[in-house]
Amino acid sequence: MPVPLRDDFEASQLRVFARKTKDAPQARRLLALAAIYDGASRTDAARIGGVTLQIVRDWVVKFNAQGPEGLIDRKAPGQPSRLNDMHRVAIARMIESGPIPAVHGVVRWRLVDLAQWIFEEFRISVAKQTLSRELRAMGYRKLSARPRHHSQAEGAIETFKKKFGARLDEIALEKRINSADIEIWFADEARIGQKNKITRRWAKRGTRPSAPNDQRTVSTYIFGAICPRQGKGAGLVLPFCNTAAMNLHLAEIATAVAPQAHAVLLLDQAGWHLSRDLVIPPNITILPLPPKCPELNPVENVWQFIRDNWLSNRVFNSYEDILDHCCDAWNKLTDQPWKIMSIGMRNWAHRF
Picture 1 (cartoon, helix red, strand yellow):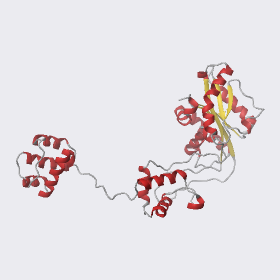
Picture 2 (cartoon, one colour):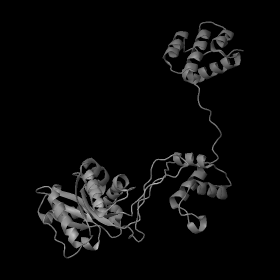
Picture 3 (tube, rainbow, N blue to C red):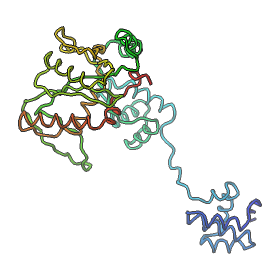
Picture 4 (cartoon, one colour):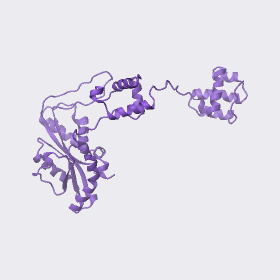
């Protein structure tokens, strides 16, 4: 017996849906069912749709169950995943803990290594492509790791962040200024020389791109400081990294601080940063970062950005050539205050 069509639709409604849809197969099926509503036989509907009677019956069943949406072709579900929720929990735990070199034979997980571990643990063979899709569905991506000093004190970063706001209030009280008049600056140094970096670049799959690489050792230093909230920077390119050079840099930073403002300068505990011979301008207070915590200083990210975009993959012909490129790179950065803000802003430092 033919399956009756649901009675909450009419032929005119189905023809309106057919005119509006951008899916041609769905429009053809809607017109075929509209003919049935008008009293045509199932054979006539099959002729309109260009299909057999059995397929018309399938259309009617889907239409009765889901309405016009049921006549849209959907992707086949494919084979069920070989991994279940228990497997995914174990994989996530293994990724978070990382491999044990003595046990797993690797220092970082590659897809092929994880696939091997899954086979050894659960006797399930998973292709790299399938495993990649599973990991992405679980929210994992292949990301660059932030550097962390191997002997960093436990909780040093969290303690510093927690007390930073109170320390700013203390400095404001000492200097008899409003806390809103404090500018937060970060400073660091980068060595740039002929022995340069080679960065990643776009190339066709399966090829190995090349880049010029110099092995000479002439170098110089960029002394850089940024004020992320204001998008300001103050830098010098100097031949040595010592107390005398640091004094010059402090004087340069002092000129960049706004009138009536006071700068709190955060930097690591290198010897020339804390030397007794430093001449600290009156509008600057130096606040050392905890030892062995480079991730607290956004200038480290500034160096990475400058190297990746302007200074790597080059051969410097002379010391003067290095100076020119370093000055040009720093000036490009300070001409883009939004870039300094994007790289340097930190919630813990700027009280967001």
